[in-house]
Length: 282
Length: 206
Image 1 (tube, helix red, strand yellow):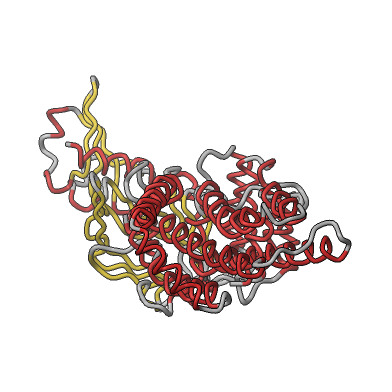
Image 2: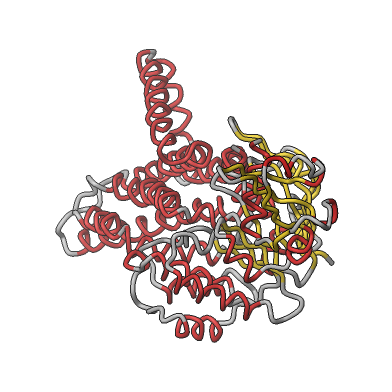
C-alpha cells in the first residue's frame, strides 16, 4: 500500500493555481516537499489531509480517498505538525495531552510523557509562555504519541535555530526506523531534507517541477562550468538551468546527455532545486 | 466529541473566566433582573468567544487535520452553548430559590415562563451566531450578526407598528405551554447544525 497517492490534483484560488500535481509516496519512505514561500506546499498538504476541497484530481492517504467519510477514521493513523503548534495558548502540555488522549484511539500517555521529558518541555507552563522552538517540539510530541503510520509536517523547522532543528530531525530519524512508517515533510530548508529524505518533490509556483528519488536526482544531474563558447556545444535538451557570470556559464545538466569529455561536477540537492527554478524563469 | 468539549472547557476556565464570573454574579443578584444576561453570556457570548479563540490560535486549521469530522467540530460548539445554558439555568434557579427561602426576594409570578422564553431566545441567537461565524469567520461574522439583529429588529418593529400582527403572534404563543418555547427553539437549533456545517465547508474551500 502506498502512504500517499496524488493524481492530477488541482486547486484554484484568486491569483494562485495548483496545477495537476501527481506523485506517489510508497509506504516506509520519506518525501521532502521543497518550494519557495507561496509555491503551494501548505495548500497541497491541506488537500492531502482533506482540510480543503480540490477542484480536480484524486488523492488517497493510507489507501483511503481523502474526500470520503472514512478518511476521518484514517486520520487516527496520521500525525500532523503544521508550521505553528496551533494549540490554544492558554493550555499547558499536560492539558494538551489529555485532549489528544481523547482524540486518538492509540494515544500512549507514557510515550508522550517520555517525549516531553526528552525534549525538556514543562508540563504545567502555559503554551503562550513557550518559545517557538518549544511549541514546535510540543506539536511533534503530540504527533508521535499515538503510533502514527504516517507523519505529515508542514515547515516544522522554519524559523528555528540550528540546534532545535537538529533535535527535530533526530526525532524524525528515530520515527522512520520502523519500516512501515512514512513521512511527508515540507520545507524550504533543502539541507534539512537532504539529510532525511528518500524522495524529493519540488513545487514551484503551483507546479510540480520535479519528483524523484533523492539519490537518483544526485546521480542524474551534474554541474558544468564552461566558457560561453564551449557552452554552445552542449545540447539544449541536456540543460535544466543556467547561471551566466563574468567568467562563463554554470549550468545544471543531465549527466547522460552531455559529452563525457565535459567535466561534470557532482551537484547538491540545493543546486538542483535552484537551477530548476532558474530554468523555469528563463 | 469528548476531546473537543474537554478542550473548550479548558479554554473556558483559563481564558473566559471573566464571562463565567459575570454569569455567576448575574444569577446571584436577587429579583431576576439580570437573568436574561446570564443566559445570553453563557449561551451566546461564550460560544462566539470560543470560536474567536479557535481562529486566533488557528486551532480550527489544525482540528480539520485531526480525526474529527466537520460535523463533530460544528456540533461541539452547539453543545458548549447548550451546556452553558444548562449551567445558567441551574445557577439561576438555585440562587433565586435560596433568596425566596431566606426571604430576601420572592419568586415573582411568571418567573418560570420568563425563563423558558429567555432560553428559547438564547437558543435561537446561539444558532444564528454559530451558523454565521462558521460561514464567515469571527471577524466578518460579527458584522453579519449585527446586520442580522438589525434586520430582525426591523421586522419585529414593523410588526409592532401593525398591532394586529404582533398581538396575533403573542396570542398564538400564549396558548402554548411555556416549556414548548425552548423545545421549539432547541429543534430549530439542531436543524441549523447541517447549515453551519455546510457554511464551514464553503469557508474552508476558499
